[in-house]
Length: 146
Image (cartoon, rainbow, N blue to C red; front, side):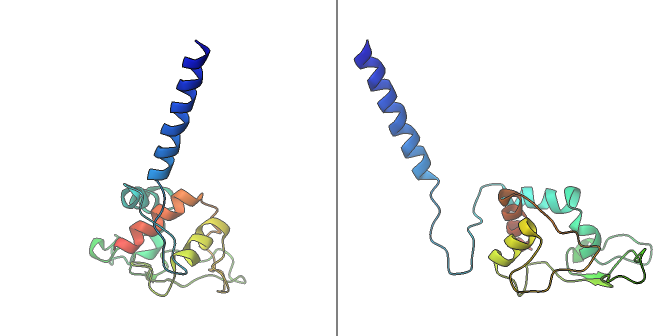
């Protein structure tokens, strides 16, 4: 009975080791983070549209204030004004469709730590996000897909 138990424990260790090895990431170019998890683009879309609400500021609007669906995340004038006129405030939101000019590592740092390397932090109303790594990678995957 003891040998059977030891054998089962050994088999479980092998199965766990093989399963863990199947999730190994492929090497990435310098400055790039792997964003390959299945469903991460869909999760990123959900997070940017319904949780972090990025789409609300980073998408231009028509005269009635509706989001221009064919220009999602292309940047535009800020849809709100600062309640504090003597403090810094962004007057427009940048184009983040495809994340032009940013490495994945910079965006990952911005979304998890609130800063993007040596770049100046974004001005309010952009919050200093503290997303977990998986959510940030999903946002990156989605925005890169645009």
